[in-house]
Length: 132
Image: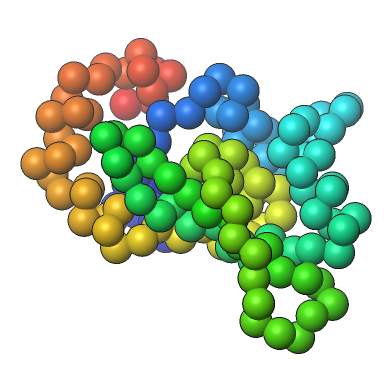
């Protein structure tokens, strides 16, 4: 993830399937049959729910946590349902629903250079698909 000003980057490991789902959403590719994230989007829409946002909420033992916030499309109230999720799934779903993606300050604080630089230095361009 990268913020709008491109000053902060949050490196999150994702599986091949989730990475593919994210890439397809970023490239606006519609698969011939719904992927898991498309299914979840379709279910929420059919149930009258809207994904209001996803938030990367925490990092523990180098594992990120996220929450998906759902709200009724018909409701004027501010009540939301929060669902625990892996960040990769939450991001893939947010991209399919044009929902905002946020990161808590606690997670951003974990991005201090002393926490991230050694980790990034041991990775090469192979780990980033040859893009670094």
